[in-house]
Length: 64
Image (cartoon, rainbow, N blue to C red; front, side):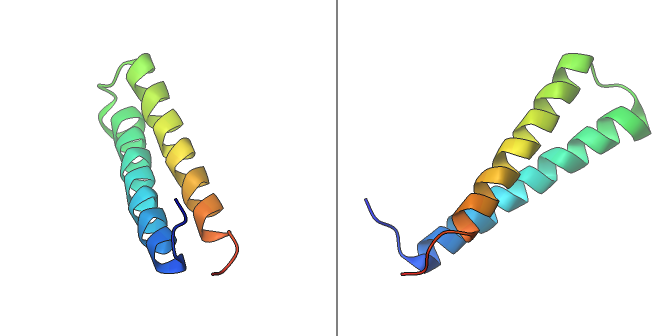
């Protein structure tokens, strides 16, 4: 299935928002509240990185 440029940008924006939310959750959980377990912090950081990388890949693709 081929997505148009607008569809890719919409999906990339959604992924970016999810990645930023996970990064904020990581920062607040680890540095502000200090009530988050190591495994949860690692998973939040992993989710943030994955979603932000996918967002960059989708935004950097060729134009249709």
